[in-house]
Structure formats: C-alpha cells, structure tokens
Image 1 (spheres, rainbow, N blue to C red):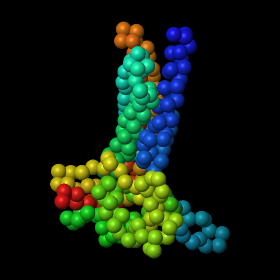
Image 2: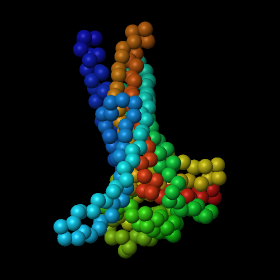
Image 3: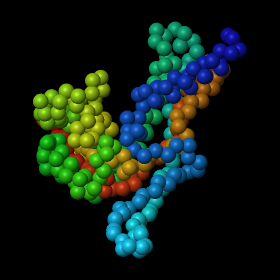
Image 4: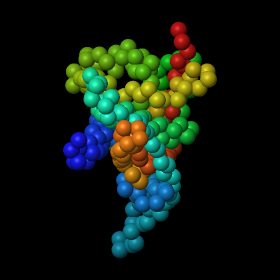
Length: 276
C-alpha cells in the first residue's frame, strides 16, 4: 500500500462528510440566527425591545427610545457520530462504503442540529393555536397569521413555518395553499423539494417535530430572529487507522447549541394526529 494512501483516504473522507452535511444535513439551521466559531462553552444572543418614535420641539433634545436590552445565553454541547470502515471489506463491497458512512454521519449530525433548534422552539408558549381535535386547517393557519401580525413580528421574508408530514398532506388539500388559481404557478410547492412560500413565509415539512402522548403534534411558525443557533465547532471528521482491526475508525463530531431568544416571535400550532 502506498505510504500516501492513508492521507488521501482521510482527506477525501473529511471532504465527503463536510459536503454531505451541507447538502443533506440540517434543514433548519439557515432559518435562525447563527453565531459560528464560538470560543468557550456558551454563546450570547442579544435581544432588543421595541422603540417608540416621538416628536421634539424646535431646538429641543431628540427623544431617546429607551430600548430595553437583554441577552440569551446558549450552552454548547459536543456530539459525535462514528463507525468502522474495514479495509478489505471496503474493497469487496459493491457500494462505496466510505460514502455511505460519510452520508450516515452527516445525516446524524444534521438531525442533531435540527433537534437542538426544535427543542428551543418547543419552549415557546406565549403565542399558541389550540389543537381543537383537528389537524392543520386553513382556520388554524389564519389564526396563527393573525397572532404573528398582532405581535408585530416583521413580515420581511424571514418567517418560516415547519409542520409534520401529516400536516403537509393536509395543507396540500387546501386550495389556497396548493391551487394555482389561488396562488399562481410561481408560488406552487417548489419543484424537486418539499417547500413552499405562502403568506410571506416559507412552509416546509419536518419529521422531527414533537408529538405528545395524546397524538398532538406541535408545529411552529416563527421569525428568524426569534431563535439562535451557536456553533463552537462545525462538523469535523477524524479518521484513524487501527492495525489490530485492519480498519479505519471514522469519527464525525461537532459542538453546537440552540436557544429561544424571543417567545413573541414563535406561534405554536397544535394539530391532532390521532390515527384514522
């Protein structure tokens, strides 16, 4: 075996894991505030209150808004996803075992990134739409839309709504969501991916949303600034050769955390998912 084979194997594996994480990893990381390359065990997100504009007299002092300032601390936690790649088994396999392991690690870390964000969303309880023994209906969507507006949540294209796949199927049965006569062809669900822009927000399904013992699924409609995600170490891969096993051990790891910054920027929509 060439003396440079191990180096090439490691570099290729690291590149494949990183690319796979960017391609098929987290669905939600781009929908929240992000701080990267954090030094330390936690990150701090700033929260600023609403300002009020006032008049002033001629030559008078400009009024001060007296904005309230607070901070949210997000703790970072370390996560690992590793597996063995047998040297000779890889040569015999009719699939690219290295790429399979790389994708599996990237998927695992991506799901963990989303889990952190969803857990932060689940702590919001200020704005809610009750499940009412029904699934996701147009009435619930409009109720949530009204709550976002009443809370002065910016309608600036940075709102996101994540729902379960059951609720996504129910949305597709709503003409105002899926019928071109209502929304136009340019706003139909995006081709090739399950996502759609509607009511100024990006709607998308997600398999990791919480469901309680009564089969009530929590869906979330939120603004990007309401959640924070911090990364002390983005996805890294360590590949080591173990001669006693004639295998490489591939360890994928990251250090991340997420937290709720402003509960007034999140509407929790309860949906009954009782099996038919």
